[in-house]
Amino acid sequence: MKLSVVIINYNTCDMLRLALNSVVRAAQDINSEIFVVDNGSADRSLTMLKDEFPDVNVIANTRNNGIAKAYNQAMSHVTGEYVLMVSADTITGKKTIEKALEFMDMHTDAGGLGVRMITPEGRFLKESKHGFTRPWAIFFKLTGMAKYFSKSRLTDMQRKDWVEEFQTSETDVLNGAFMLFRKEALNRTGALDERFHVYGYDIDLSYRIRLSGFKNYYFPKTYIINFNTKGRAKFSFTYIREFYGAMIIFATKYLFKMPEIKMEGIPQLYPSSYEVK
Image 1 (cartoon, one colour):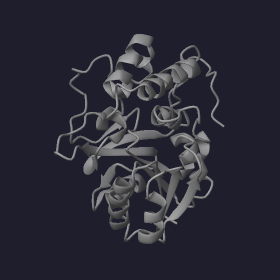
Image 2 (cartoon, helix red, strand yellow):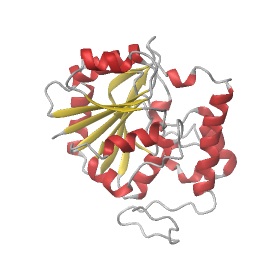
Image 3 (cartoon, rainbow, N blue to C red):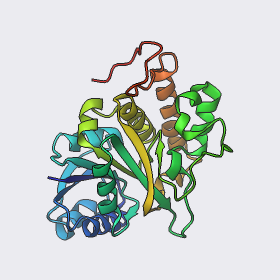
């Protein structure tokens, strides 16, 4: 099996339909399998999946277990050489998966890959290049952790070597809307950290991919359309709890024992206190 696609759904029936239609079209010439993990949706999602996508593998939870845990459920079933984690509010371009896989096949050092993201109105999303939204970038600057994300240039956005919108480049973090991983890299990192319920799981996983010795890439020669439904209720208590809670979890996990990225041929100055199983 070349590719396993995993989508997490929670009450996004109409968006999920669009996401699946685009993924099925984009992967029609690829030996692939698709998994949808439903986190206890109360809408017509499960009925829609049964009626319209009978070939999709569905894992139906009775409650919302969070995104990281849902991905872990699917990971125990996937058989693909590559694993694509794509959000239910994303439309995948017709040639996006094909081009992304070609890049991964040609770059054996690549553990993960993200692509150029645009809004439904056609506006480029800067999170495509470095994975971070502005609040996360501020968080890393304030805590001093920005230095561990040098590929994101968080402390010097005006550097001349900073990547442009259409420039392929190594990056620190992949955006959770579309993350293509080499299964071998995921095997090294182990399961996703299930403490990250809605936010932060992509940042944590991307960092651990780099810790394992692989690289993450920003690949802009194709695209996805992202509706960013997670970011609409930014003033709700649930959003504040989940979003800023993820930052606290990340800081607690790494702030006082931030491991160095091990790169082949470069000596490690200080021993890492973090082990990737």
